[in-house]
Length: 630
Figure 1 (cartoon, rainbow, N blue to C red):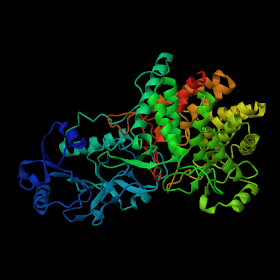
Figure 2 (cartoon, rainbow, N blue to C red; figure 1 turned 45 degrees about the horizontal axis):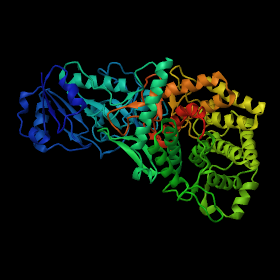
Figure 3 (tube, helix red, strand yellow; figure 1 turned 180 degrees about the vertical axis):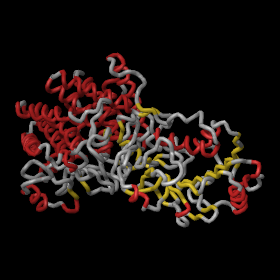
């Protein structure tokens, strides 16, 4: 069997073809024009861009060979024989769903409804003569399912957006770029490998003997359940996480830090960088750096943390006027204030004071709390955000007279945590009473709080604030609130160590959604952990709960949550990935995989603040709490 591969570059797929036992030769598109194609038994055509037209000279030769009964595989080619495909478009909001053909053989190992995701690919779907095609994969928008969709076969077949199809027995054609399926981290991995094996065998007649190693490995290879391994791996994970943050710095930290890595990965494996400064991410990362410096004697990281604090408490803090104390959200939303983002930006400054003897930012934090308290409703809760252009003395007074804010832990509970610690440090009872009222309001509604992504998220968000509430008040009822939420959380724990996304009644605003921002949740029970909105808060939350209660149960929960993070940290030769954590993790597959629809923070996103810095601080917090302050 002699196979001609027409491709300008080697790729994951060409390497797989070379392992099939056939005689393969790769030539460029230019050189293919001048080849004698009659010497070959099959052809694989892999253009660089989606929707390219073949050179007429090459096309004519290929069509003649195909008419002789020779097989031709086409990747995202715009036209062949009488078939024409549409203009290329993106696949971000679409998913591939397998359909068993009505006639002929399907793909072994697949069942109708199986889903495949290829992140930020491009597709050129058929436009003419669909009746002559047998679809195997079909693109469908906004499928609310994890890895398999129980959709009506007739309904699926109504879609004419074919992703993979046959024309007779001699043409196999994809609408999308397949060639670097591994580098581009198509998921789930095992399903794509099954598909690639099928395509390779269809072309060459032989089974591939090789598949590429994943470009990302998740977790340490050591058993972190063993105490000696746990401590060693914890320290190594912290070092690697800090090194990843270093790569995201803006102007060596003087300009803060970038938001991180976006979810979108192009067909050749290039992942989108989120390049802009955010106040919350910068404050959180400054906290991770300062803890790391304090515990390891790394003076350069202490300096980095101070430089980054200079951004948070410098240009991002309004110091005059009716909005004095407002912390700006980010570069492009200069006039927006989210209290949750403010809290996460300033909490590290409060940890500085409590555990490292540094009170240099307490006055500025009090100013930030003053602005937030002035715009808090009577029940201790704020609305989801405030905008400076709406703010004056009258409008702020009106907000304070409102009976209710947003009863959401996502928007308010970390604000309460910041209020409590600021009150504990400054001695100002107003902060403590506002936080007490707010958290008691949330817990009076719990578990029916106003959820954003999931019920799991709300539970995870409450552990730290309730721990601090109990620390500050010492009241038994607040201790019981903490234990109630922590016990409830264990009901959704997965054996791998993370916590499944769960939303009783699917009441969360983004639950089972597929437009704009969306939850990773599709169905209660799916083995998906969210390290942007849920499981990422737990190392720090459980560490604090252990600190204030002294209960070994919370120590175990902290160790368990850290062990989960050790098992999910990314290892890669790609420095933009290595050492970070991504948002969505399938705990059965043990790889990044979840619904890809989110506007910018789907499963492969890695936030410097929300995810990486929060996990790092949680990993270090017990060690920090046991250190004597200078």
